[in-house]
Length: 261
View (cartoon, rainbow, N blue to C red):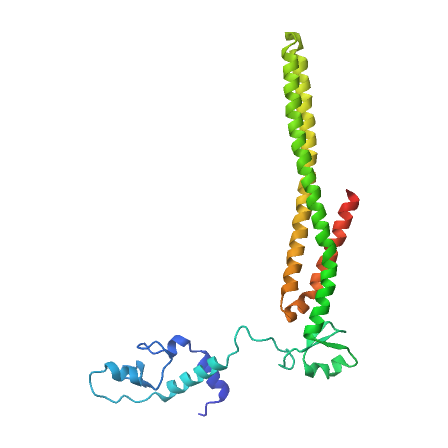
């Protein structure tokens, strides 16, 4: 029965690298030979430790499998290779302005891109980076504004607490000088003061928490966008639209938040 190329590839793919490894040198078999016990070794490895004179037969099928395995491993593309066009397996050298996507030279001449405008990938990436940087700048400035407002809120909250403690001390000192019948008035005022402090502190806490959430969201968007700006051209262009939408959405939410405040 004639073994087809497809059958050969499937047979080879079914074998793991471990099955094609010599137990002596721990490398892919070179000139593999098989013993009567069905174990296989490289010819040189076997002769180096085999004490008895013998000439075991060459395992041609295993030899061919090893050579095919090494050839495939050598031809396998590396993980860091430049991405290619999914349609034509060509390098993505151009950027289609109409479809807003990287294309190869074959794509440019195809019907899909008839009468479309193109730019080199590096030029398109630079233009889009500038555009995204302009869109990001208001968010960066807004982030600084929110951070300043939060700083003012922190100071106000601390002042409320200090002021409350000071007022409490004054009230206590004042009522110590009064007669016993004024004790209930003292306690009532202290209670009222603490309730007011709690109410103000709670309101300020809610405002600070809201600001913290807004700052966190803005910080995340800014960091993510800055990461996109530092990305490789193709990766940047692929994620460009999502990055712009994210920045625009954050910008609109921030403006709405400022109007509500």
